[in-house]
Image (cartoon, rainbow, N blue to C red):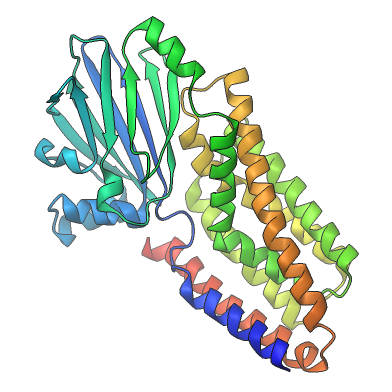
Length: 363
């Protein structure tokens, strides 16, 4: 009984400790486009980080709300741009000429316009890491006016600085030293470990099974399915709007838990559920990756796609292995079979219903 109690307490803590806006609220990506007469920088922040940024820029709730929730675009005073990015030419900081905030359903993009400097190299600092403590690492992609990749790297709270090459020679060298396999692999690991909705769906599928072999089959089906749609979406072969994908992800968790409560424990049915809904979850993974690989094309896109997906799978396998071990242990207890599975399923349904309503109406 002690094991059962500990397992229940751990799961309850996990369910209620995670943020309600579970899908990447603190993600960020930065794209810099070098034009002949100016530099345009686009910083895309996940929902919670964007709200914090809008407050820091001095917008009252009645103005920030339509941007964060309604997709409105608004011109802001460029003087606040230093809270987002800082560009330095030598020891001189460039002053932005314009700042726009363009809202989406789960993120806000801040577009900054700077004059094109005379020197061939600039220094960039992602100052939004100083403002929002929970920011996750994100990519910086530098392209030219023809959308050709000049450089890419990974920005984080511990490494918020990067050099921007403005000449072809230095651009080629920087691109060769850009964000590589390890950076995107770690990005994938962090993405799944903080993707509580994906992990809860996996938990809902596994919680009623008794065989480790059946559990492994479920994890494999889910992996293959979301890897397929992740690749298709990242390559722009298939695209679905986040306003459809995110509610469907929350709904998939509810459906799996309702099946638990109805006693439908057939492994074959869960295998199909893992495959079908795994396709939907893959589109959820792809949203952040697509932002991170802007400017990549052809072979340049294959490396981040492969390494990010491997990172997702590595993180998922770590969680699944711990989950399978715990479930194999506690399912030996009759009390768990009678009370544990229904209680866990009801808790997960409650959290997932909140996510569903939030993604449909509250975001």
